[in-house]
Image (cartoon, rainbow, N blue to C red; front, top):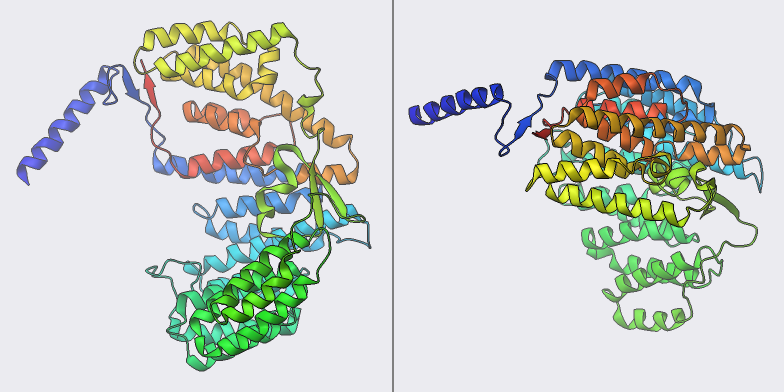
Length: 525
């Protein structure tokens, strides 16, 4: 022990000596940048979360709930009380959005998807706060009863939380499985009364986690009710979700396989008659999964029913006539982000107008050659920055000669990588200069998106708003990279930017970076 203490003391003294010489343990020429102290980092994170929340005031009402929900989710680690308050406000704001006003109301259909996602996200987040606040689950249940969207997914989340299905088996916050069955059963009955649906996903997770400890009578009743309601399903999407329950219930209650077989046959027959162009793919895939499950119970019956499914194949990918088509907004829009867990009767197709930069004319041969030269020099500099820092710096200088307005428009992320190389090679002044040019171009891109938004109709504005929390925004990514090398300066710049739509997301990303207190960035000298 004494020898180990002496070694540690020696290493500490050596570290101090090297730091005084501008060197570190990363190898010759490396020096570690000291990160902010934890308390300072926490204060910065809280302030940036607050700035992100305040920036929402400049956005239209329909754009606020999604972004506020994202803020609530990410700030939980530094401000759990504020996180729950933001979740509750996001829930309230989502409920206030008007839904579709009849068939063909495209804008209303998009708002409905926003309502579903945000209300589910808020309830899931608040329910998970039970680890720090035992009343949080009760509050999540109260909000579920107030929700104005289909409640099946909401009760799914509550059931998974109450049964501990959202926690690892060894988590100290996991509930006692002996009582979980009663809570799950009560929530299932409430869901059936309020929504007329069975929360298949939630019960499936509860059965997989605690079937052995659940009261046998309660488990039997849950499985039997689920089988009965599954037999009457006609929607392929609902049947696909029910399959997870059927699979878990088969393992938990094999004695009820006779009832399961009847339900499977009824569902397969129903799905085989579904001919809608936009659901036949789901119907086909689900039917074959159901057949596979039936085959484990009665292979002969599964083989016979399977003969009727030979013609059930997915059609060509085209929207059904009369369906609502929504273009995907900038950076992925409605096709990604928070909408991953919500299904809707909308078809999403790419929109070539998504990025304002796309309106520029195609580059000429000289521009293409210049871009190619920059890309080659950048790649060479990146590959040599450890083995030959001097040569890497020379290549970076050559690459910087190609940085102009056209290159910034075409390769904004690559220019950011060039700035990072300069910092890593110890040329901070050059790195700051290149980052300044790139961030100016990023600000211009963000302002172009603001202009595109202001000149668009309501449906197009909804599409753009749906993409604002996308993690793939080039503006947000560039600022995040710059923050690794100069966090205070980047944060100050972000707080004073002169654009509107992306500002909350940008401040949120920087708040997350501050809250996780990232390790020091190592810089080459």
